[in-house]
Length: 399
Image (cartoon, rainbow, N blue to C red; front, top):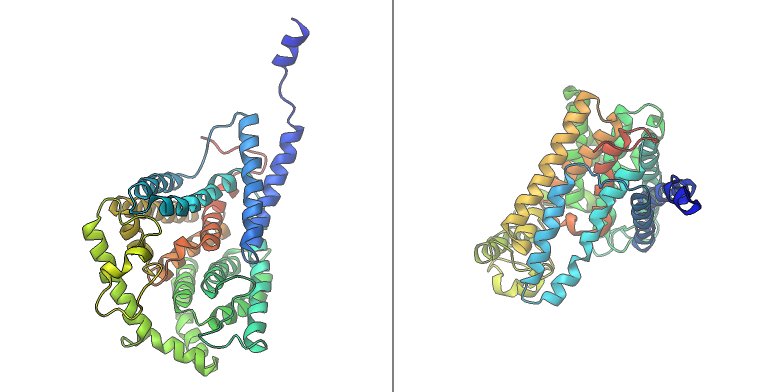
């Protein structure tokens, strides 16, 4: 055998690959923390993680492997691109589809966050969330972010993003508290700050989502623990500032302007769907065509979206896209629930993933959180980690 043949037959040197795998893991852990601080930093780390993932996959000739819930997401991406091409303004709609790249959070998390790395990632999420919550409390108490015109938002650009991320972190911390071992004390210590911070954002959708996540986790642990929720609600009403309790009461006020506007948006979405059932009005086109479909009872003259995840997806991208999104949701909940019950998936991360999904669904009836980049990235991280962490760190997931 010639020297050239011997070199070509030799197995590849994986020392660089090992370093890339480590870099990919560190970048993914960094994303989990950076999302709650800076979207620019998080997306920079995402780019690094994707490069590591692609390089490792190509060099090691690995098959493309993902949890099965990824395939409806891929279908949703394909339908979204078709909808963008058929949009009244394809240039604007196609530009908006760049968010589909965030779906890559699933394969790179599945590849890098193995074994105990899953628990480490959840610890990063809760720890950074606790710091962010503390800063939000300071904003409310000292910097006068204490009314609807100026709400706590941490270091992020919008209070809705901030409250949505806190909602997800609350689910992770409660999962650690109920099902964990080594991180239970830390979760118990930071839970009050997380709960207070999300309450002080005045964001009702996040309150609904956090309560739904808590109810789900308590029921998974022991259904009798559901009795805790009314006690917590009573304490909240008794101790919260008057402005916060007034905001809470507005949830049930049908004459509240924002409630009336959300009802009107449902009717507006229905009209969009009836006229564009297959591919919708186009990504990022709801605001453009809003005036055409505006309901007589609407409060706002214009809205950027319909403040409802399923309605927004159906109106913007069509009923096939909604069906694919519902298939994604159903597979996540079914596979996480089955894995949690059977013990095939780590209990803490599976419970945290379920909490993330149900809180997204509950809050998403009142807010288009699935379209928020920071929220979507953290959601995809949390629902993928249980499947990745079920494999030892040194193993490759079976096809």
